[in-house]
Length: 194
Image (cartoon, rainbow, N blue to C red):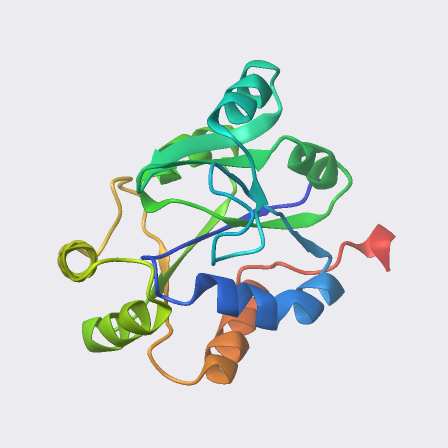
């Protein structure tokens, strides 16, 4: 049986990178690979462990079919390498750091994907964004408004419900809850991988 895409979404500053980093070893034990995104941001930029490429290189890879998924957000281009299809075919699960706005498109390609929305209270998000120091005060306020609208709507642009995971508290508690959600959804090591 093929593996499943775990599609993690959430606003910038919600703690997706921290959750992914803290979950790597338990995810590996579940037969889940964490994919490294391709982003048109320099490798020297502060942020996630991603492959930073130029816009020209990104376009070249896209034209050559090197991406399973790609989208534009926050003035940058993002992509998931097509290599995940091989992992899925081998029965491995794949954790993707995805985009809320791109969920419907991702679900077209991976109908069984498990959408998980990492949420965070606005006051916690404000503190994290200020501490991170990547955005101006106006950009932070814009992010907070988008977060409030999204939380109020209760869904994404895709009508399909998503699993919500609150990351306003301790990261260790969020990791535990994340792993419980995966177990409840049937994400586990395939029999032939044990």
